[in-house]
Image 1 (spheres, rainbow, N blue to C red):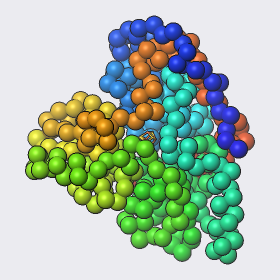
Image 2 (cartoon, protein in one colour):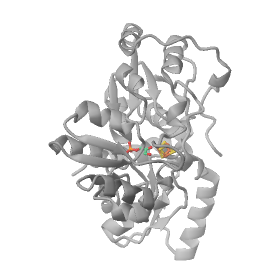
Image 3 (cartoon, protein in one colour):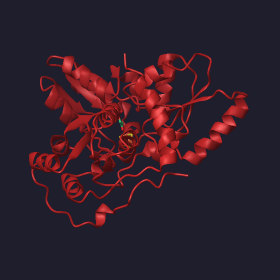
Image 4 (tube, helix red, strand yellow):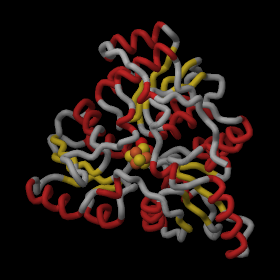
Length: 330
Ligand code: 13P
Ligand code: SF4
């Protein structure tokens, strides 16, 4: 069963007030004991309003290590669930509860449970290890042995003793990349990210012709044909580290286009070109885009859109998340 994890509010039906400036929203959050966390795929105004902006791993660590009473998580639903599981005493809420993720939708916990049983029987192995990418529901995390993010996936896979069979869910492209990098032969689930699977080799090569000195950075959620022409394959935190080290470089960015706001802010010395999506000059995640400054302002004032995780599910998911957090990236 999927988790009945939130008090649903249909934000499309709410009459929203205009938002004040990001600084005013942060001041309001400070005065009302609310910690605002944002993923780097959020639009600039939301990033500016947040106390902390990071990748999935950094957001999880931040939520766990800060004893917040209220957390407003600007990102997608699984990120808010993760914050709630790691910071259970906090009230966690989101600007728009409908902000989901195609990877999380592509792996239902009841299907996973069935497949795990099938695979154990087929392999004749009871010691199957399930690794889940953090982009999944709390119920899927509860069925998994350990979680990983794009920031620590290699270390997590390498932490499993050689010879143990591994099932990797839900992202087939990230799983395939990990198999290439680690020479493991993990069994892969077949879900994909609707944003990263749409980049095209042809348009990337056209951009490369226009900017011959530019390096292509691709997220490991991209399919193999895109990863193969990229100069670097890394998660959002890895990309940020890389561009900060560069001096006056040019980069073609094959990930969610809002990431470039963060790059321009933290590494303004370089030039960034967004890899085009299928029908426009950018590539934005429709789920991340559900959050707007107006919805954030509404959430801060009403604390609606609360995310809840039933304790039996949270306990299992917490174990798998904490195993991940014990592994330090190299
Ligand atoms: P990161 O883990 O790199 O932040 O990515 C999250 C995500 O949703 C990528 O599409
Ligand atoms: Fe999910 Fe893809 Fe959006 Fe990331 S970019 S939240 S993986 S749909």
